Length: 280
Image (cartoon, rainbow, N blue to C red; front, side):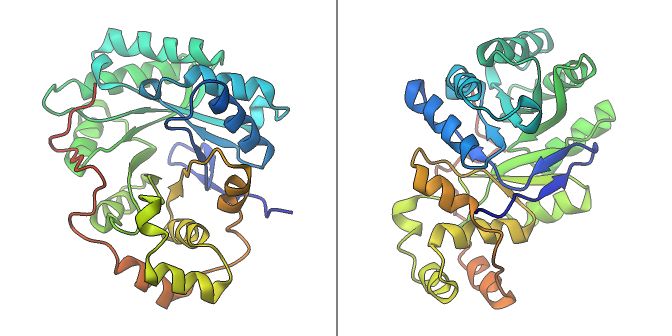
Protein backbone atom coordinates (compact mmCIF):
# COMPACT_ATOMS: atom_id res chain seq x y z
CA UNK A 1 0.00 0.00 0.00
CA UNK A 2 1.41 3.40 -0.99
CA UNK A 3 2.01 5.80 1.89
CA UNK A 4 -0.54 8.65 1.76
CA UNK A 5 0.68 11.89 0.20
CA UNK A 6 1.38 14.62 2.77
CA UNK A 7 -0.03 18.10 2.24
CA UNK A 8 1.52 21.54 2.36
CA UNK A 9 -0.43 24.70 3.15
CA UNK A 10 -0.08 27.65 0.78
CA UNK A 11 0.28 31.24 1.98
CA UNK A 12 -3.46 31.79 1.43
CA UNK A 13 -4.35 28.83 3.66
CA UNK A 14 -5.25 26.43 0.83
CA UNK A 15 -3.87 22.88 1.36
CA UNK A 16 -2.11 21.20 -1.58
CA UNK A 17 -0.66 17.69 -2.04
CA UNK A 18 3.13 17.52 -1.75
CA UNK A 19 3.49 15.79 -5.14
CA UNK A 20 1.31 15.90 -8.24
CA UNK A 21 0.82 14.53 -11.73
CA UNK A 22 1.95 16.46 -14.80
CA UNK A 23 0.06 16.10 -18.09
CA UNK A 24 2.19 17.88 -20.72
CA UNK A 25 1.75 16.06 -24.08
CA UNK A 26 -0.84 13.67 -22.63
CA UNK A 27 -3.73 14.24 -25.03
CA UNK A 28 -6.82 12.52 -26.37
CA UNK A 29 -7.98 9.19 -24.99
CA UNK A 30 -4.44 8.31 -23.91
CA UNK A 31 -4.33 11.48 -21.86
CA UNK A 32 -7.74 10.85 -20.31
CA UNK A 33 -6.73 7.31 -19.39
CA UNK A 34 -3.46 8.54 -17.87
CA UNK A 35 -5.31 11.04 -15.68
CA UNK A 36 -7.82 8.42 -14.55
CA UNK A 37 -5.11 5.90 -13.68
CA UNK A 38 -3.11 8.58 -11.87
CA UNK A 39 -6.15 9.35 -9.71
CA UNK A 40 -6.75 5.63 -9.18
CA UNK A 41 -3.11 5.24 -8.13
CA UNK A 42 -3.43 7.88 -5.42
CA UNK A 43 -2.52 11.19 -7.08
CA UNK A 44 -4.82 14.05 -6.20
CA UNK A 45 -2.98 17.02 -7.74
CA UNK A 46 -3.40 17.09 -11.53
CA UNK A 47 -1.54 19.80 -13.47
CA UNK A 48 -2.57 20.97 -16.94
CA UNK A 49 -2.46 24.21 -18.96
CA UNK A 50 -4.42 25.99 -21.66
CA UNK A 51 -1.45 25.62 -24.01
CA UNK A 52 -1.09 21.88 -23.41
CA UNK A 53 -4.25 21.51 -25.52
CA UNK A 54 -5.43 18.75 -23.20
CA UNK A 55 -7.75 20.41 -20.70
CA UNK A 56 -10.59 18.44 -22.31
CA UNK A 57 -8.69 15.16 -21.89
CA UNK A 58 -7.94 16.04 -18.27
CA UNK A 59 -11.61 16.78 -17.66
CA UNK A 60 -12.57 13.48 -19.26
CA UNK A 61 -10.08 11.61 -17.07
CA UNK A 62 -11.53 13.31 -14.01
CA UNK A 63 -15.05 12.31 -15.03
CA UNK A 64 -13.98 8.66 -15.48
CA UNK A 65 -12.54 8.50 -11.99
CA UNK A 66 -14.49 7.55 -8.88
CA UNK A 67 -12.44 9.96 -6.75
CA UNK A 68 -14.70 12.78 -5.47
CA UNK A 69 -13.96 16.17 -7.05
CA UNK A 70 -13.64 17.63 -3.54
CA UNK A 71 -10.62 15.35 -2.95
CA UNK A 72 -8.84 16.52 -6.11
CA UNK A 73 -6.57 19.50 -6.64
CA UNK A 74 -6.71 20.62 -10.27
CA UNK A 75 -4.35 23.23 -11.75
CA UNK A 76 -4.34 25.02 -15.10
CA UNK A 77 -2.47 27.95 -16.57
CA UNK A 78 -3.13 31.13 -18.55
CA UNK A 79 -1.29 31.38 -21.91
CA UNK A 80 0.84 34.39 -22.81
CA UNK A 81 -1.39 35.51 -25.70
CA UNK A 82 -4.29 36.20 -23.30
CA UNK A 83 -2.67 38.38 -20.66
CA UNK A 84 -4.72 41.54 -21.09
CA UNK A 85 -7.46 41.72 -18.46
CA UNK A 86 -10.53 40.94 -20.58
CA UNK A 87 -8.77 38.21 -22.55
CA UNK A 88 -7.51 36.64 -19.33
CA UNK A 89 -10.99 36.52 -17.81
CA UNK A 90 -12.38 34.85 -20.94
CA UNK A 91 -9.48 32.37 -21.06
CA UNK A 92 -10.03 31.33 -17.44
CA UNK A 93 -13.71 30.72 -18.19
CA UNK A 94 -12.79 28.81 -21.36
CA UNK A 95 -10.35 26.64 -19.36
CA UNK A 96 -13.18 25.67 -17.04
CA UNK A 97 -15.57 24.95 -19.91
CA UNK A 98 -13.00 22.65 -21.50
CA UNK A 99 -12.62 20.55 -18.36
CA UNK A 100 -16.33 20.76 -17.43
CA UNK A 101 -15.29 21.93 -13.96
CA UNK A 102 -16.93 24.60 -11.84
CA UNK A 103 -13.64 25.82 -10.38
CA UNK A 104 -9.88 25.28 -10.41
CA UNK A 105 -8.02 24.71 -7.18
CA UNK A 106 -5.05 26.61 -8.60
CA UNK A 107 -4.65 28.79 -11.67
CA UNK A 108 -1.28 30.15 -12.79
CA UNK A 109 0.09 32.72 -15.23
CA UNK A 110 2.21 30.43 -17.42
CA UNK A 111 5.06 32.86 -18.23
CA UNK A 112 5.64 36.54 -17.38
CA UNK A 113 6.30 37.55 -21.02
CA UNK A 114 8.01 40.73 -19.74
CA UNK A 115 8.51 42.19 -23.21
CA UNK A 116 4.74 42.28 -23.69
CA UNK A 117 4.26 43.86 -20.27
CA UNK A 118 0.74 42.61 -19.49
CA UNK A 119 1.38 40.19 -16.64
CA UNK A 120 0.07 42.58 -13.97
CA UNK A 121 -3.21 42.85 -15.89
CA UNK A 122 -3.35 39.08 -16.06
CA UNK A 123 -2.73 38.89 -12.32
CA UNK A 124 -5.59 41.32 -11.69
CA UNK A 125 -7.85 39.02 -13.72
CA UNK A 126 -6.81 36.03 -11.59
CA UNK A 127 -7.52 38.03 -8.42
CA UNK A 128 -11.03 38.82 -9.65
CA UNK A 129 -11.66 35.24 -10.80
CA UNK A 130 -10.71 34.08 -7.32
CA UNK A 131 -13.25 36.49 -5.80
CA UNK A 132 -15.89 35.08 -8.16
CA UNK A 133 -15.22 31.55 -6.91
CA UNK A 134 -13.69 30.29 -10.18
CA UNK A 135 -10.28 29.67 -8.56
CA UNK A 136 -9.34 28.73 -5.01
CA UNK A 137 -5.67 29.76 -5.13
CA UNK A 138 -3.72 31.88 -7.60
CA UNK A 139 -0.07 31.73 -8.58
CA UNK A 140 2.45 32.00 -11.38
CA UNK A 141 5.01 30.03 -13.36
CA UNK A 142 8.54 30.99 -14.33
CA UNK A 143 8.46 34.39 -12.60
CA UNK A 144 11.77 35.91 -11.50
CA UNK A 145 12.01 37.85 -8.21
CA UNK A 146 11.54 41.19 -9.99
CA UNK A 147 8.30 39.95 -11.56
CA UNK A 148 7.01 38.63 -8.22
CA UNK A 149 7.85 41.89 -6.49
CA UNK A 150 5.99 43.92 -9.10
CA UNK A 151 2.83 41.83 -8.69
CA UNK A 152 2.72 42.36 -4.94
CA UNK A 153 3.70 46.02 -5.15
CA UNK A 154 1.04 46.91 -7.73
CA UNK A 155 -1.83 44.71 -6.50
CA UNK A 156 -1.09 43.93 -2.85
CA UNK A 157 -1.55 40.21 -3.59
CA UNK A 158 1.33 37.73 -3.49
CA UNK A 159 1.28 34.51 -5.54
CA UNK A 160 0.78 31.33 -3.53
CA UNK A 161 3.05 29.31 -5.84
CA UNK A 162 5.75 29.87 -8.43
CA UNK A 163 6.11 26.83 -10.69
CA UNK A 164 9.63 26.80 -12.15
CA UNK A 165 11.98 24.49 -14.03
CA UNK A 166 13.79 22.61 -11.28
CA UNK A 167 15.71 19.32 -11.40
CA UNK A 168 19.11 18.00 -10.26
CA UNK A 169 20.90 19.67 -13.16
CA UNK A 170 19.28 23.04 -12.36
CA UNK A 171 18.36 23.26 -8.68
CA UNK A 172 17.44 26.96 -8.64
CA UNK A 173 19.03 27.57 -5.23
CA UNK A 174 18.77 31.38 -5.35
CA UNK A 175 15.18 31.37 -6.61
CA UNK A 176 14.17 28.85 -3.94
CA UNK A 177 15.76 31.01 -1.26
CA UNK A 178 13.74 34.00 -2.48
CA UNK A 179 10.53 31.95 -2.36
CA UNK A 180 11.29 30.77 1.17
CA UNK A 181 11.97 34.32 2.36
CA UNK A 182 8.66 35.54 0.89
CA UNK A 183 6.50 32.54 1.80
CA UNK A 184 5.88 31.45 -1.80
CA UNK A 185 5.73 27.70 -2.42
CA UNK A 186 8.10 26.29 -5.04
CA UNK A 187 6.63 23.87 -7.56
CA UNK A 188 8.91 21.99 -9.97
CA UNK A 189 8.24 21.37 -13.64
CA UNK A 190 10.39 18.83 -15.49
CA UNK A 191 11.40 17.51 -12.05
CA UNK A 192 13.14 14.48 -13.58
CA UNK A 193 14.89 16.50 -16.34
CA UNK A 194 15.55 14.44 -19.48
CA UNK A 195 15.20 10.77 -18.66
CA UNK A 196 17.80 9.54 -21.12
CA UNK A 197 20.49 11.65 -19.41
CA UNK A 198 19.46 11.66 -15.78
CA UNK A 199 18.65 7.96 -15.44
CA UNK A 200 22.22 7.11 -16.48
CA UNK A 201 23.85 9.51 -14.03
CA UNK A 202 26.43 7.68 -11.91
CA UNK A 203 25.87 9.77 -8.77
CA UNK A 204 22.12 9.27 -8.79
CA UNK A 205 22.45 5.55 -9.53
CA UNK A 206 24.83 5.11 -6.61
CA UNK A 207 22.42 6.85 -4.23
CA UNK A 208 19.53 4.79 -5.59
CA UNK A 209 21.47 1.59 -5.01
CA UNK A 210 22.24 2.56 -1.41
CA UNK A 211 18.55 3.12 -0.68
CA UNK A 212 17.14 0.28 -2.76
CA UNK A 213 15.09 2.76 -4.80
CA UNK A 214 14.92 3.87 -8.42
CA UNK A 215 16.68 6.98 -9.68
CA UNK A 216 13.30 8.64 -10.24
CA UNK A 217 12.30 7.97 -6.65
CA UNK A 218 15.57 9.43 -5.38
CA UNK A 219 15.08 12.61 -7.42
CA UNK A 220 11.47 13.04 -6.36
CA UNK A 221 12.40 12.46 -2.72
CA UNK A 222 15.17 15.08 -3.12
CA UNK A 223 12.53 17.49 -4.48
CA UNK A 224 10.29 16.78 -1.49
CA UNK A 225 13.07 17.27 1.05
CA UNK A 226 13.96 20.59 -0.58
CA UNK A 227 10.35 21.63 0.08
CA UNK A 228 9.31 21.55 -3.58
CA UNK A 229 6.09 20.16 -5.03
CA UNK A 230 7.13 18.06 -8.03
CA UNK A 231 4.71 17.18 -10.84
CA UNK A 232 6.21 14.17 -12.69
CA UNK A 233 4.43 12.84 -15.78
CA UNK A 234 3.99 9.27 -16.93
CA UNK A 235 1.36 7.35 -18.86
CA UNK A 236 2.75 4.08 -17.44
CA UNK A 237 0.77 2.68 -14.51
CA UNK A 238 3.94 1.19 -13.03
CA UNK A 239 5.86 4.47 -13.28
CA UNK A 240 2.95 6.41 -11.83
CA UNK A 241 2.99 4.15 -8.79
CA UNK A 242 6.78 4.31 -8.55
CA UNK A 243 6.87 8.11 -8.70
CA UNK A 244 4.40 8.49 -5.86
CA UNK A 245 6.09 5.93 -3.56
CA UNK A 246 8.61 8.31 -2.00
CA UNK A 247 7.30 8.78 1.52
CA UNK A 248 8.63 5.59 3.12
CA UNK A 249 12.32 6.60 3.17
CA UNK A 250 14.53 9.64 3.63
CA UNK A 251 17.74 10.93 2.13
CA UNK A 252 20.69 11.83 4.30
CA UNK A 253 22.53 15.14 4.27
CA UNK A 254 25.35 13.60 2.22
CA UNK A 255 22.83 12.34 -0.36
CA UNK A 256 21.27 15.78 -0.65
CA UNK A 257 24.66 17.45 -1.03
CA UNK A 258 25.71 15.00 -3.75
CA UNK A 259 22.55 15.68 -5.73
CA UNK A 260 22.81 19.45 -5.30
CA UNK A 261 26.38 19.29 -6.59
CA UNK A 262 25.02 18.14 -9.97
CA UNK A 263 23.42 21.55 -10.57
CA UNK A 264 24.98 23.81 -13.18
CA UNK A 265 24.49 27.40 -14.24
CA UNK A 266 23.48 26.41 -17.79
CA UNK A 267 21.24 23.57 -16.64
CA UNK A 268 18.01 24.72 -18.27
CA UNK A 269 16.70 22.04 -20.61
CA UNK A 270 15.61 24.34 -23.45
CA UNK A 271 17.29 27.65 -22.63
CA UNK A 272 13.95 29.18 -21.58
CA UNK A 273 15.12 32.14 -19.51
CA UNK A 274 12.07 33.96 -18.08
CA UNK A 275 13.90 37.27 -18.45
CA UNK A 276 13.66 36.98 -22.25
CA UNK A 277 11.49 33.97 -23.19
CA UNK A 278 8.05 34.75 -24.57
CA UNK A 279 5.23 32.18 -24.56
CA UNK A 280 2.04 32.63 -26.58
